[in-house]
Length: 116
Image (cartoon, rainbow, N blue to C red; front, top):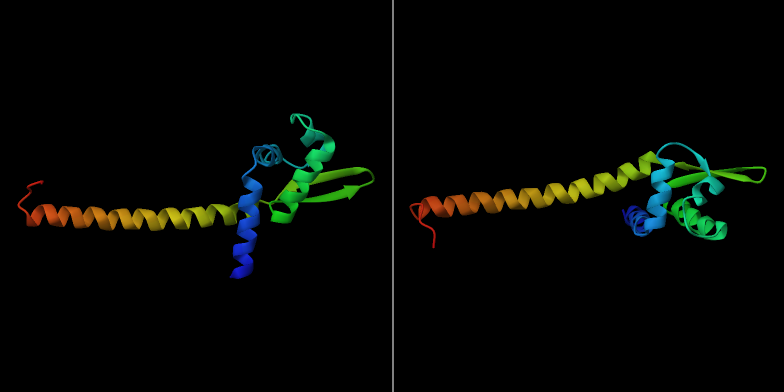
């Protein structure tokens, strides 16, 4: 469980940066080289490589190198884990709000529908 929490921390850290989110968005259309990922970003290739390393460490992407070209691939399963974590939190909050709504409705009925 602790390892899973640490991995989620790495994923959320990676997602916290707009450049890394941009890279993930680009990879949503399929594998791309680091050079291709760098084109729309206003930073050096070395800067993009650092972002790619953070994304790889988080598990959100993987990469392979053939010759001088490093190609990156989005890991949809890792993104799904982030989505599931958020959905679980959302479900818990919705459950709490439903309980509050039921309590408020019960209180209103007990008070004869009067609001104070």
